[in-house]
Length: 310
Image 1 (cartoon, rainbow, N blue to C red):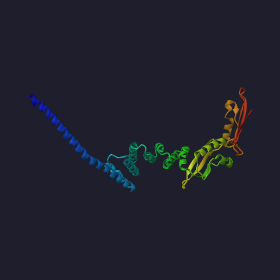
Image 2 (image 1 turned 135 degrees about the horizontal axis):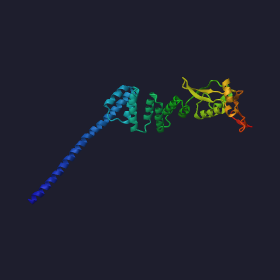
Image 3 (image 1 turned 135 degrees about the vertical axis):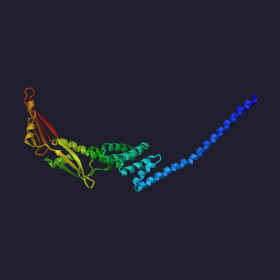
Image 4 (image 1 turned 90 degrees about the vertical axis):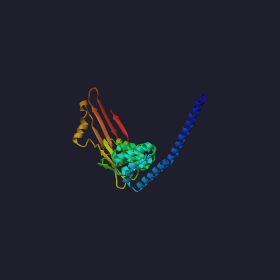
């Protein structure tokens, strides 16, 4: 009896080893059986991607969009092609989602933020488009398309300094003519000297900043701005839009205001601007307050300034 129990235990151990061998064999069969299927699936994905690329080359965008219904797990390139197709048929939200998904898979691929900027631009979401392009230019700072695109967005937003920062990287904008609206009374030679840029050249940001400093130094333009007007030949005209001070003032009411605005403080402030149209300006103060009597005259010309106090 004792010997029979030992044989039963040995028999059960043998059965377990046999069962393990059978299970291991089944597992190997499953692995070997699934490997060709996996290869076939990858090959199928490659074939589908090749089909999408072929359709894209033929600009058959709607057919690409239709493939999304049966798409496998997409790669970043899949998302890029899908996003492009959605954008071509103006399905902006779908295009944006596709490009965002591709960008998450390949965050170092600057194509995705550029295309996201294009989608936002089409929807007139200019701040969002600018933000995407700044991300793209961090990845590819020398990309001419991205720099030109971002400069254009800032130009449309009226931010000329920012536009020049990026346009200058691609040799833009080329200036054809410089105009003034309205035409100032100051001598044209003085105004020309204030402009640090010249026609038939590229307008660079440092030149615009220097011009702005010189115009303020003239002291006769309390309000002004520089606009760029696009031409059909791809160049631009610079328009100096200005409000100019003139003499004692442009009319009687302005003269009276400038002269007597200090009356509540027992003073008058005679002012004269652009004497003989040479950008010579005079400001003075006469105060008769017994405690604060003072006479002050200030004369300045562009670019030098001198002050006389009595």
